[in-house]
Length: 143
Image 1: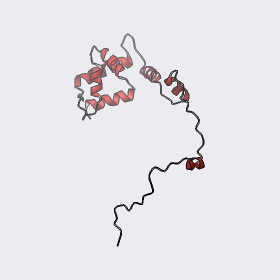
Image 2: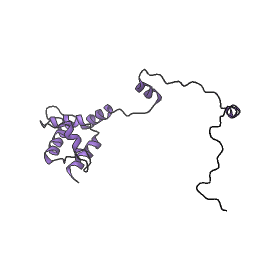
Image 3: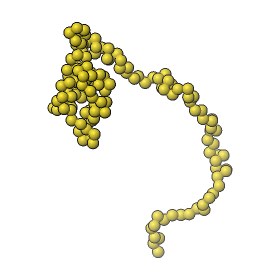
């Protein structure tokens, strides 16, 4: 198991977004860009994959301690921080109302009503374009 795997598992377990990871790293004065974070979480066969170095993981873990526990002067309860993060993540539930909200002010398209199909009308107006031809599919007739 390498540093990238550890970092990915922590991100999933704590339900962290990229901007939260950047915020955590800044708590220990470690600057990392959103692009670098994205490259760390890519698959190993991707062209932009970047291996997670020891320094990045070490600073993230030190920042994570401060993020969850707080400092000596201002302690926090880690469970409250995790509950707060979980509350910020709103699960998407597909409801008809949510679909309408995403559509904005658009109205559903209405199609004109079609006449019911009547086979008798269709036969009387049918125009024969090609005369009847019998196809033998390339087989020669026996003589």
